[in-house]
Image 1 (cartoon, rainbow, N blue to C red):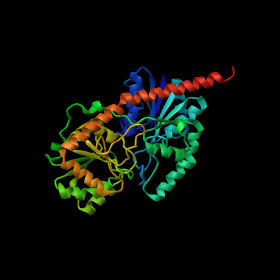
Image 2 (cartoon, helix red, strand yellow):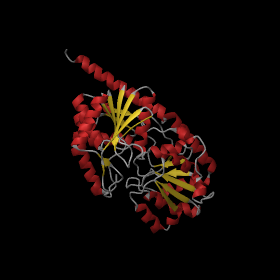
Image 3 (cartoon, rainbow, N blue to C red):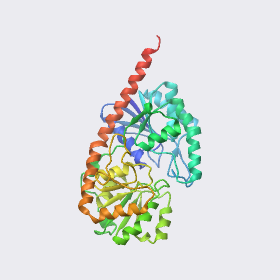
Image 4 (spheres, helix red, strand yellow):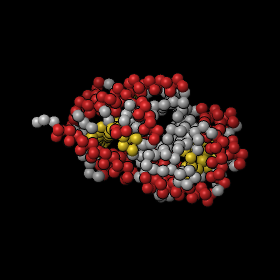
Length: 403
């Protein structure tokens, strides 16, 4: 197959969808498929390169200014007549059998969707992030953007949807009128082998943490992952374990949690290290006793699954049914909490710190779950199976057209 992978976010930019789209592109190529990537220019990365059998084109782009929104991080936009012509030229030269888009509100999806409609190419769209906000004004605005603009854009080229969790299914049905027959349930993928060797850095030594209890929180801080609930739980944790440190790993695009930490008198327990290279993330997990950051009720993302793959007890605010077809069992292969109850979160963290044996047993079962259900190999196979079905339908439709 000739597969075009499309994502405004792509390495060297860090982030869950960036890493997943790159990993899938590499896996498609490793299995003998021709792969092209269309992405946005980012911080001096070359406009064109070939890596791991993948041809990567980075289109000129501008960065959206930070406005304090729930999705307020370095979103790059490529919309414009020149890039539209570039997209058509690149894809016409490549002649894709299928287009795999990542991100419904990123404009390269819109541009390649227009191409797909004109050229009759089937599209698979992975929905990584829901356009939502905890703030009422922005929530209403985002809902209007979804229902008035994005729904119309998506209808024009009618993609299939990769649904990664139950919240995404509900969201796509509500916002885009997507129907279940257009869904393929494929979870986010991680590469457990990244966490099998010894860590490259001694994070505890570098930060002077010694053997004190350490909670690591990995992921960019935005309003939808604001860490405020974690701050509200921290006083109770420090009451039982006063030497505990919380290390936040990722860019801080929304700093309300720092103000909350100062207000609660726990700021000294919080260490923010900013964004780190992808290769350093295993070292932070290796140093941690517990990982926790997915607390908004917005799902269980890549960083949480990677923490599980690394064998660290991981706390998330989702339901046991979060992944369709995959069962999470609280205090067995998952530690699940409410997204609005700081006391419950504090009790969960204290319970994990109280009992290292239970913590290790849960972490081992979480790691086994990732190896069984969330490996890159398994998820790649699921995507390729969907592509084959999509192309089969296209061939059947073509055969039904009178000659």
